Image (cartoon, rainbow, N blue to C red; front, side):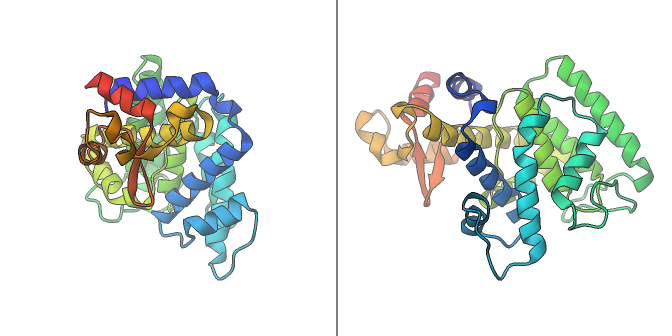
Amino acid sequence: MRKGILQSLRDTLITRTPLEDFPDGVWKRTSALNTWGTNAIEGNTLTWHEVKQLVLEERSIGGRPINDVIETLQHERAFRDLIRRKSHPIGLETILDLHESVFRGVKIDAGRWRRINVRISGSEHTPPRMEKVIEEMEKMLRGYEKRDLEGEEAIMLGAWLHRRFESIHPFSDGNGRVGRLLLNLHLLRHSWPPVHILPSDRARYISSMDEGHSGDISTLVSLIEVLMARAILDLLDQLGTAMDELKPLKDFEKEGPYSAQYLRLRAGQGELPAVKISGDWHTSKRALRLYQREM
């Protein structure tokens, strides 16, 4: 994703509606989508339809494990609370509180650093031993503060922070969800909207994290940029003008100079900002014009 496109989309969004002033309905839908995605890739059984029913419609659902329901409700509240947290520095207590907020009543060690040695399933990376967790977390936060003060680009720094947190794996369970909340808290603190990692993103996400553990975060940065473009398009579709309405790519063929087939290719490559809706790529007139300008 070209940085000029991403920056222009973001500037359009926050000029139109500052992040903290999103209408409640928009923020609630955003938190429901984020909650469904982050839980689903960790094995939570609730579908997107059921999460919407539970969070947006405030109606109960039946036949699902009670812990899956509790996790969903508590993560959604923790996500919405990131707006309040963004005006405060990120410290050890912030991270412990995020874990406790999501897993209270679900995990017996909610809000406590792990007291066991762990491995990351499917990864060759081995997290530090349990007695090193606090030391490594403090080192991580010192590094984060230094990079932040030096003005490191926000998405690059967010990728570094997320990869570093997951490499430490400071909790016995729930590291992925807390790590993604931490990433979004960082983004919000730098006036970028939150990103959502959905089930369809899981394979690419895991692959990019594995590469990150090997020392190369470039694919993770690229993934976050694509996810950011998708998140901004979705928000502008709700908050923007007619220029921001999401439409199928075939609707733009007559405006030229690109065919729908070409645009699908570029959307799949992450070069054209686009969102998949019912299996079909959609973009906006604004996003397409930015793409044409950059090319």
